[in-house]
Image 1 (cartoon, rainbow, N blue to C red):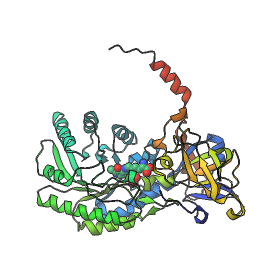
Image 2: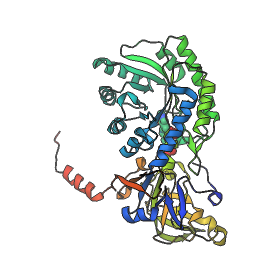
Image 3: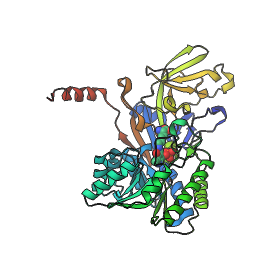
Image 4: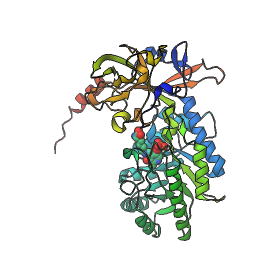
Length: 455
Ligand code: LLP
């Protein structure tokens, strides 16, 4: 979400509803959660998370049969509770593979009991030790992004008697029509291998490398089908090339990237995406695995960030509401000018045009940077100090991008799970991660400082 939204006419995001003027997420009162866990607080709905993943799984199965697969992009939200919930869904049939880009993400996926054979190691800067450890853990699928990386992987795999199945991530040179900072498929971007080099590499033989397919990823938060169609066309040509040059094509990795709208709905839908992939790839019942790696479209609408207004003041022609979350708690707005709706927890029954500040309520964070702002938020009319608010669609690239900048503790994180489908009143709440503790950081630093290393 990078375009301004007209929140006045927009229905509430998925999972949110007012009951007796109190905002609930997945049937759970947010005010009660704030009372128990305090703010800032990331709150996830397992129900929405699993439904989003299931929509992808269903779309891939509808269009590619048993060869359609979903490999969740762990970077979007890597909390063990989230990964576990995706790997062991209520739908039972999601063979949730995982796309990881670092040893840390790999460790998290393994801790969530995702089998190593179902993990794809991607990323544009894999170190030797990361590749070695991944192979030793039983990871066999790599998406390689540089000639040098391929050579290093070959010698590492050879040295430990392993074989790495490799798809080269090619540069399709496609403009994904999204924010510049999350466009990844253009010639000028840092990702992937340029076509001439990829062609040369595919024709070479390596002792410990088995080429098994082709990979691509053109960017994130893409809300139109056209860039994907262009990409599928390019991949279809690569499949032809591989077939004509003796590479046994076993998997096509289409990357992630489908965006969401202001309500958290995936747009276009996974079904439309998969239908187009099927149409353009023209695989006609060939036994080739087709993978997508969605992150945002699975996790974003499954999470919100609960916060509180701390202070209000007039600045220029605006009413400025300072909230208790900053860019350290949620970076997307400062980094990509992303629009995330902030809504009050207690319904304000006044119509927006009855208040004189409608256009000019500006939500900002407490961090000492001018970029620490959350945009004009029309729904914050009448906000008073201490009011609870919810920043919506924060489940993807929210908690994973937090820091303790300005010595601010990172938010606590909880997940709501349904105990029974019939009764929305019966939820269980699990703490996924404690609030960060600056006191603990100070203790750890003091302890570290007692060790002197002589060189
Ligand atoms: N596969 C690869 C190789 C990727 O690099 C990414 C995202 C994905 C899959 C998942 O893409 P998704 O379905 O989530 O769009 N921090 C940014 C997003 C960075 C995305 C990086 N790569 C943000 O908050 O918008």
